[in-house]
Amino acid sequence: MAVTDQSFSPRGVHVEDVHVALGGGVVLDGVSLAAAPGSQIAVLGPSGCGKTTLLRALAGLQRIDAGQIRIGDRTVAAAGVHEAPEHRSVGLVFQDWALFPHLSVAANVAYGLPAGERGGRLSFKRQERLRESVIGLLEMVGVGDLAGRFPESLSGGQRQRVALARALAPRPSVLLLDEPFSSLDTNLRATLRKEVADLLREVGITAVYVTHDQDEAFVLGEEVVVLDRGRVVQQAAPAQMYAKPASTWLAQFVGAADVIAGEADGRVAETALGRIPLEEAANGPVQVVVRPEDVVLQPEGDAVVVAVEYFGHDTITSVCLIDDVVVRGRTIGAPVFAVGDQVTARHSGVPGIAFSVAEHDR
Image 1: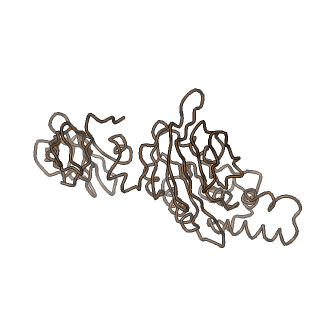
Image 2: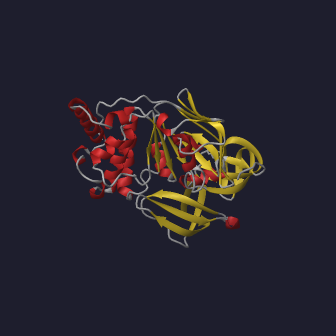
Image 3: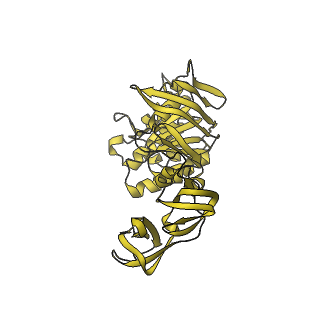
């Protein structure tokens, strides 16, 4: 995708203690998050956690019951305040693209322009400016040659690019994307999400992605916000969230992880996997997060291989330790062990995260 001469004025997004109830149930329960101007954040969570409701509240399609939402220095939603969607300078890319089938690609994009630019009888100069603006947007997203085509003749990736151009047409300060790549096949999804992320970073627009895919969230978001049952579990950079998750549930949600019992004494915990060094000192019974890449497997020993999953680039080997504790180890390339093999499993020695069993953890 190429960036043409398109001007955007990004604004920050601030959500503070937002509550939304629908159908007698709480959907958003005190949600707070922040996105700096020009940044990209990904909102991640399981189905039913409130992601789409949050996106609709940001767009102005859903009223909030309490709290406030600010876009830039303007409060667009609060007690007694609900600014209309068209006044928020927010663009929205839908999961199913929502293109008008009876309009050409160019007309779909032009529909996203302010009414004053597309409505009524236009002079020749204004028509030319409109055409140049539409073609510029289509070229920006890499489909400048499709202006005269209709949506039904386009591939999924092409439709998504047209939907993106339409959302960018009014030069919004914030772009909201609702599961924007979920309808695409795996290879195209990986390619397009990188191109879209690179484009939005280059034009400098503030972007908020909603997704249920952890890999996608980590690729797209400079920061990731994880929602669970209407509450924010953690907002952090992907690497920080992976290394220091706020809970054992989050550790397992944002990547492969096993949680095993241990007894902590300062900066070390005794577990079925042996002694595991800890990031922070703890004492007494703990739950220790063990990532597969931190489990080292060697031939012969007291552990038994119970499952082998080969993914081409790496292999996950599950082994049963004493007391029927099962942990997974990750190795690069083809499987080294088979189900039933006797192995030794040990921890790599990289300091891990431990949670006291007395702490509330989902």
